[in-house]
Length: 134
Image (cartoon, rainbow, N blue to C red; front, side, top):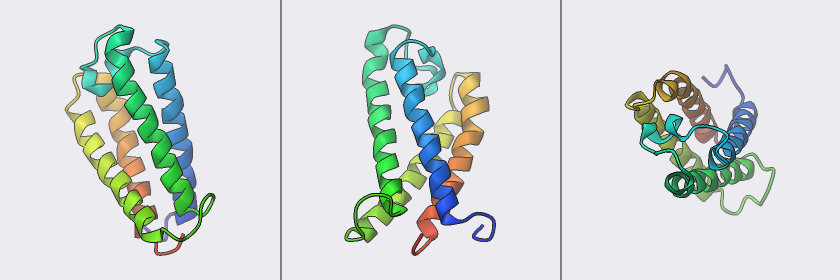
């Protein structure tokens, strides 16, 4: 895997993907994307039922972007290198669990579209996590 993609490219793709995901969650919050294609199809239509989960997902996406940006050296310092590397491993684990959740989702959109996407993102996070110095 190390010969196929550089850690910088993997990190940059992850930044773009999580940025897109953040925009997606804003669109769900705004009601422009149906809520039944997220959260395994368990969120009912209506603003009250989607606000909490979508805000949590948005904050998590932004936090993941911050961890990746620090790992790539775009922001912050190298003082907390082990914690940031640990954070990338957490992102990898989250994406693996999210893939499992997508496979079990009631929504076929979530299963067919988001499962391959989360597999790819998990592999990119793994690539970034195993690199000693990106």
